[in-house]
Image (cartoon, rainbow, N blue to C red; front, side):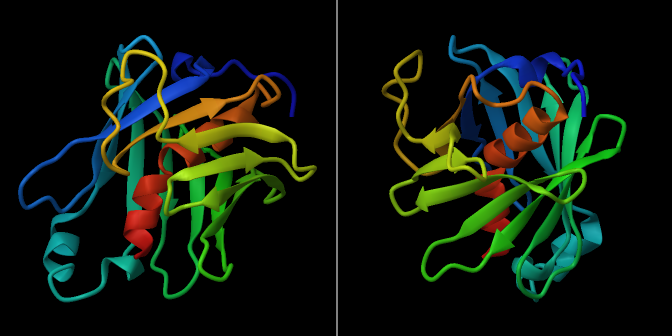
Length: 200
């Protein structure tokens, strides 16, 4: 695919994801911080008004959804889209120009959700697997080489903050590619809590 200049947001290797809590919330929203405690962006779910109404009567697991990842300047740097679904989710990851760069495919595994992160050609870039109950899992490539992790452990500015699964850390290893594949891996990993919530 070649080396591609990533937006600054994706050039970090440590992301702290913190859910925004609100009353009567129909859409998920999260703040994203770096390892120094600086807010570097937001993740927001876009929900059309008529979907909010329909969600009062139908399971949200079947609804399409859009998650926008924005940087500190409120510029959308990537987005995640899922259409209507009635079984396993197939989710598309797009760059800031709306061009598909990858996807997320939910796989069935007894009692343990398993997700494949795909590249633009639908080839598997990585898997997210591990202990979801303890919120401790790895991002590995097809050779089982670790590309990152998603945990509730934080050694920096937010060491005492972790209290619920709605606050978590995504770390990216040096072995992770630095092109658009990294965008797909990071976007898939940092939105995984919202993907799980919308799949239930």
